Image 1 (cartoon, one colour):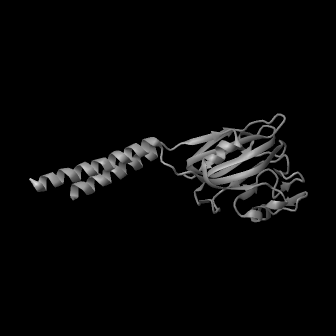
Image 2: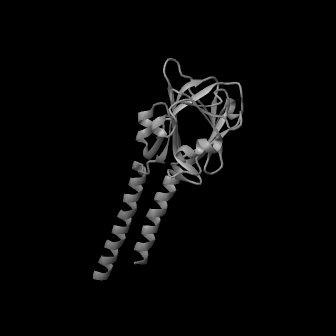
Image 3: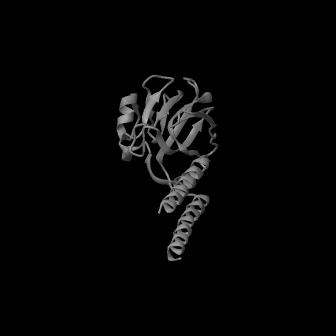
Amino acid sequence: MKSMFKAALFALAATSALSSASAQTTVFGDRATFLSSLSSSFTDGFGAADGYSGGFQILSNAAMTAVNGQTRYETTGFQNLNIIQPNGTYCAGCNGSFTLHFDQTSFGDANGVGGVGLDIPNNQGFSALVTFGDSGTQLFALPTPSFTSAFWGLTSDRQIRSIAFGPGGGTTISVSFVMDNLTIGNAGAVPEPASWAMLIAGFGLVGATARRRRRTVTA
């Protein structure tokens, strides 16, 4: 029995170690593929159906955060200048930087969410400085739309705690950036094929140990 227990522990430990080793961060360029990687999600379209007036609005950080309560907004160029435009898009003063925090949401925990994605109708030099749940950071280039909105999405096993939008991820009051359809969600927790193989092998080891024990008792 002790041998079986040890074998089971080995299988679980090996699978856990393999899952940790395969942790990854993925960038997406299209919404459909991004959404398919999430087990659940919430999208803020910044329109009347999402709790806004449907017209031009200027909201403080607290008021903007309270509309849906899933993302905490912080304008970092201008202060408390979250703008909802009549076409249902968001900008921070429409030429200012801002930070989105994901540490207070029902689609994650204090370490953040598994995925963030957004449409970008206008980008004049902004990048995304991501802070992960383990406090590590990474700067990502954002697409520049041409005739239609571009899409940028990110998932990470490290979780995404916040994203600072600005030139080099810094602050500004002079560069335009507009976003729409902000999506946050839980990344799908489906084991990779290698993880399944390791788990199956582990249970096979448990079965082999049990068979050897039965043969020994019979003899």
